[in-house]
Length: 111
Length: 163
Image (cartoon, rainbow over all chains, first blue to last red; front, side):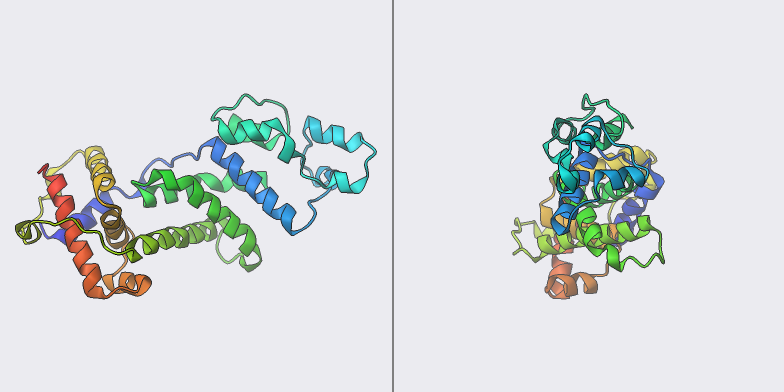
C-alpha cells in the first residue's frame, strides 16, 4: 500500500467526528471558569451580586450572605469564589463533594 | 460565564484531545488557553459562525502553535536503517477489519514515536496540511519536512509491524 494512502486511511478511520464525544473533566471546567472570571476581574470590576441576581443567575449561599452584609458596592463586586473552598475542591477533584444550589462548581460536577 | 464553559468545553476538549494524542498531558492547558484567548478576542466574534465553530477555530490555531513549536525544534533523529527508509509497500489496512483495534494500535504507536515524528504525521495526515504549508509554518524547507515525514513513516511502520 502506498504510504500516503496508508496514513490517510488511518486518519479517516480514527476521525473524531464519528466517535462519541469525550466529556471534559469537571475539574477542567472548574479551572477554566476560575481562569475566565479572574481574567475578567483583572480587566474591570465584575457585575455586582445584585446585578448578577437581576440578570437571572441565582446566588449561592455565600454570595447571598455577602449581599446582606452592609459593606458597600465594592465588596459586592468582588469575586467570592476566589476564596471559596468549593472552587478549590472543584478544580482539584473529579466528582467533588459540593452540593449547594447555584454554585457553578457544583453544577459542573453534577453533570 | 459558567453556562458558556458548560456548553462548549466538551467539544473543545474532544477536539484538542484528539489532535494532541498521544500528548494527553497537555490537553487541559491548551483547552484553558483556548477559552482565555476567546475571552480576549470576544470583540472580534462577528456571529457569522456559531460560537462553537469559532471556538474550534481558536482551538485549531492553538494546536497548530503546538505542532509548529515541536517541528521547529532541531531534529533529534535516531539512526534508522537505510533499508527501512527505502522499504517497499505499507501493509493493506483494509485487511484490518476491527476499527477499534486500528485506532488503539495507532494511538499506541503515536505515543511511542519521538514527539517530532508523531506531530509531523498528525499534522500531515490528520490535519491534512501540505508539506509546503508545514514548511512555511515552521521556517523549514519542504525537503526538511519531507525528510522528517519519511523517517516518521518508517518508524511508524517499524512499530506497526512489531519489529
